[in-house]
Image (cartoon, rainbow, N blue to C red; front, side, top):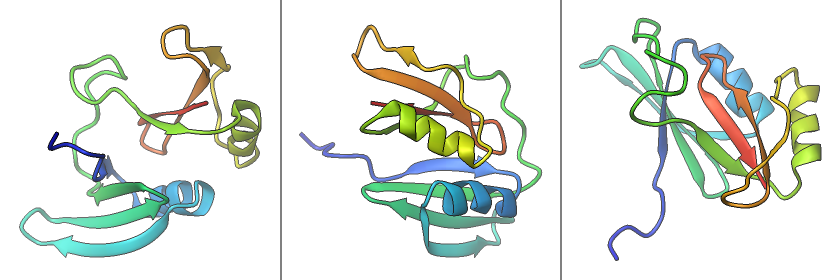
Length: 126
């Protein structure tokens, strides 16, 4: 098979300082590369934690999401955690609100959603 693993996840944000506080300072991703892209008038910053790389595009005037989150295309990003309760408590302690923890009756385990500063739905799943 040609597709062996994910390479990166691309996220568009409106404010680098808010995104940095969320993804780097709170979630623990490390900034590994950055570049200004004059042809697009935006900045690109690559963040990594373990095997997960997030490609952050920063440009305040990108359009808002059309619907949230039920639209064609990417619905949400999900991160694996070993134990959902302490992971949700960790997010909440940093001021990141999570939804109630629910059971995943299809895939097993439990999960909850939270949002990045631009409203992108994110999930933790055990």
